[in-house]
Length: 246
Image (tube, rainbow, N blue to C red; front, side, top):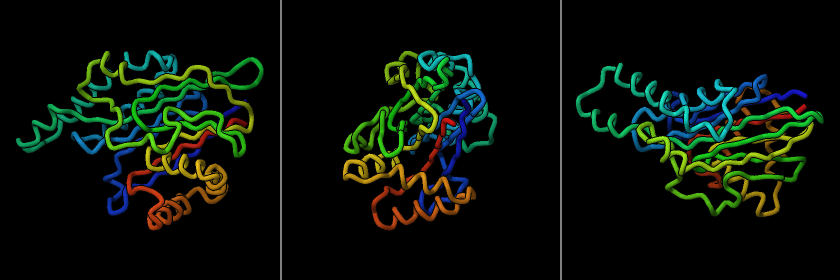
């Protein structure tokens, strides 16, 4: 069995694409996927989010529970990149503080019966949903729309490994079969999906219709802007990574 992924993203309304601070990476061959959401506090958070997802997807031999052990190398990369730039003197306190992001990493492992086992690690409110048709089999780490707040757990570019591990949530026994979807998304869209489901709606059907349309991102952007205008979706960077087991 094989995996096929599709990615969509849109910056916060009023911001340019250069100001987008989420990040997403995917490798269908390795079965590795990650999404991160750079936090507004700190500096160069978009860079930090991008380094986090690229590192997770690249390290195919690393289990999700071992993910915190790789952070020191990512932190060194971030620090070297930032300090290699010409920065005003008043930026130094922000550099010392570092950058922060929520994070979600998912690894799919083939099973002998043609299905996949999936494992996940999360810090904060970037979410994974496993759906089969209109039914959600697992929501991780958030399960209800009321769980979202203004102070999610974060991965810091200056944080010690043990501190990050203490913020992690793990899931190790997910099982998917052909036709199932795994949806990875940042907090604004994840909260909307859960709220719609709690009202008896079918957000997964809406997302499937988007995936069936043109892949130029225009339909996704129009849909997100419609939800924002109707005040049904918070104005924030939005990232969606949809994975189909075929």
